Amino acid sequence: MYSVVERDLEIDLVLSPGHSVPVPARLHYRAEDPYAVRISFHVTSEEPVNWTFGRELLTEGLRRACGTGDVRVWPAWSGGRAVVCVALTSPDGEALLQAPVRVVTAWLRSTMRLVPLGTEGERLRLDEGLRYLLTHGA
Image (cartoon, rainbow, N blue to C red):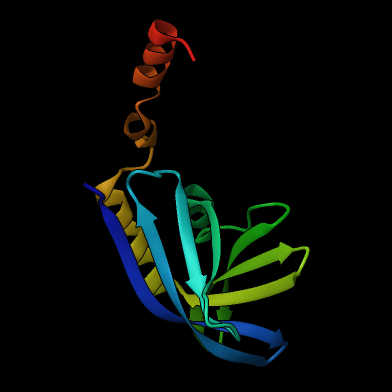
């Protein structure tokens, strides 16, 4: 049985300083992949664009700037409201997203009730998998 925490929301895709467009998005977390979160959003295609990265990165990014490379996260203020910024970089381009801190924080709390931070490894059953491989071979 899968344990999933999802939240639909509208995020802002920042096009330039002071100019953004709202984009429907979904935050997605599965207990079976306990370290990862996924953001799916619709831009100009029928299929959503999916980005998967560390739950801990998003959690830490609510408090301070963090991340390197393809995903960076930091807290900010925009239009008088607290937001979390997520910068995504790929060979196809870059995107800067802003989501309401209140919504992201509430959703992250739900994921932590399902799988508390620090207990993710227990979900993976690595010891059982390793024991099976050592007993039965690859």
